[in-house]
Image (cartoon, rainbow, N blue to C red; front, side, top):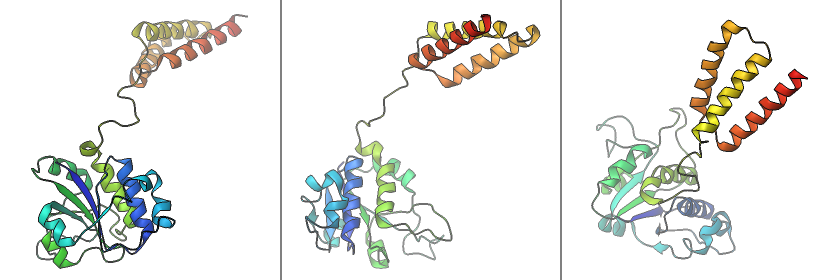
Length: 237
């Protein structure tokens, strides 16, 4: 499955640039534009696009709405969904968080579509697409800026589009002997500060629970052990 992004009849070049940047952030590159504004290489679209100005924006395809619905499984985003089939051209809808799981089972190329800044999509356009996506927001003001909405949706699709992120796969937890040594040093510290003998087992249990939740790194363990060592030395002097 390939995943494209379409911006339909955007009025503001900056929003096109912002969406291109979000695509770059989340591993997408195929940008489709329906009735786009002029995208001046020296204007705000390229200014807002970040590194996407180098590839995504200059390689964007200008297409028709009909071409998208004919060639792709299309997902249109909208803020206003209403609540049942009697009140809207298309119902039900999915949230961005649900969309990734839905699209994972689609056996065709997919295009996620973002509509006009003020009015989104027409009812006829919504009737022509395959799926509706809507971002849950405040009931009193659910309409997001176009660039913001696209960023949220594309973020939720990252499991389909991003092979690896800048985040490490796992916390570099300290070796267990080092953590055990820190635990023992805490016991010595309790004795050095004269913590009541009958309260020490409880304090020790709380400390072990804290370490268990924290998954400290090797550097954190070494730093804490050094602090306890210096504190104990000060107390003994």
